[in-house]
Image (cartoon, rainbow, N blue to C red; front, side):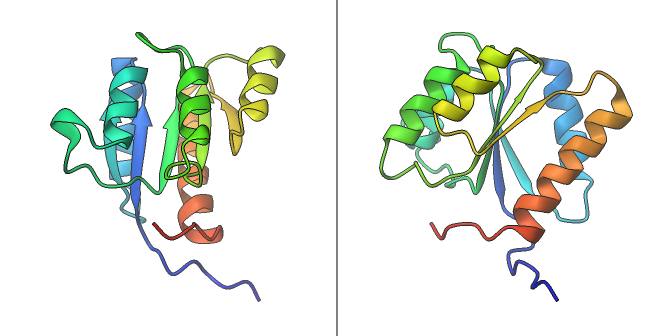
Length: 148
């Protein structure tokens, strides 16, 4: 019998610039039974500031999970991934690349930069809802996350 993760909910950092995807993710994750708290940054530079608790993000919580889009303004998602995985204080945070790209080069580059998972955003609503629900359920109910 599998043991269930004791952490019922956690903090998710959504790094996404598409307003429609942000609204959809907030709706899906905000209405789930798990009850994750979602924080949003809309570009790579702001994401790193959030993670490093700089400027307006001084009181930001350390996320338990990061959902990262690749095509971001100001700093590409792959560079964000490389920087956070190179930072000893941030490197253990699981990163799920959640991108509209299904390019093999993007998939390979993401894993080479130590992404924990790569998911191509489904093009239909049901698939999108299912993908986010599965991600949240896996990371907060099945997997055991590192302590902060």
